[in-house]
Length: 385
Ligand SMILES: [Zn+2]
Ligand SMILES: [Zn+2]
Image 1 (cartoon, rainbow, N blue to C red):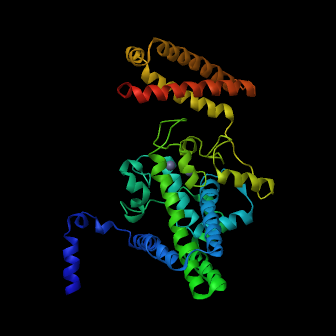
Image 2: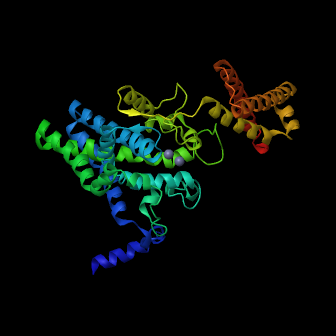
Image 3: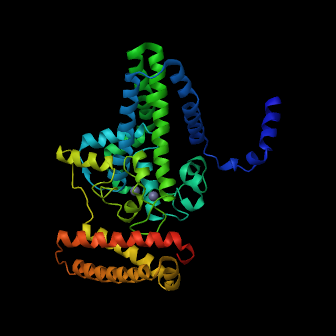
């Protein structure tokens, strides 16, 4: 009776009463609540009490990298986008460690992700950012909005026996390999305290870190950063996000060219997933890496710059007033040059005429100089943007 009364009182707290309880996905919500609570309470307490030895740190690092890469390299670039072909050992490893991230089976994950690309920023996008930052980050996992959508977009994966095997055994695999093995290794290292450390650090805290890194791709990578390739959808490029997401932070490029095995397409981009795929190719474990040709990428960059420049035409007086006549003239000069370069590159690609590397480099440099100027204009003339 007392418990029922307490529950009734809690339900009447304004914030709590606004939660659509009938839509809560209880299994996922309870799991996420436990992981997040342990990660911010039990993990610091353990570290305070026992400290961090090299074994526990190494175990955490191994599981963090193995699980994180299995999501980005396996679940994402291999299974969702088929951006390269992989031999069985790579498939098996990414399916096993991918399960340990507790982000569902590869089949479920890929189905959601393909829907995300197809319907990005719209209702049928499972992690639609237009429903809010928290919805895209974690809300979509805690609540079910409508009936389950059919998984009719992963028929290719349903024909893969390894994928189907992982789909069937995903939960036991996740618990045994994701929590049981780190606890066992910790026990062998340092008895009961070691087992607790293995469970909390390489288990709980690692799941917490990998999950939020994936969630950030759906939330922050659709909120902060630049859009050099297209502003058709909310996806953005962020070098900072790439640091926390095994290179997935170049999300604007990825949404524009989803079948490229690279997300950080520039040589200097931090993309450990791309480097791992490249290395596995050299070892003969993966093949058929898909790369979008440089000309096509440059065309997208030029097109986006043209779109942004077009928004500024008709604001000549403001440009001259804020930046001076010289800058105004430069804007027009660069704008015309971009239009000419774009037309020349488009013609060459349509007619399949080979363009020299030097030419591409020049056009790319000019485009980037112009986009830097455009960013400056947009910052200082927001009303004209
Ligand atoms: Zn996205
Ligand atoms: Zn994707």
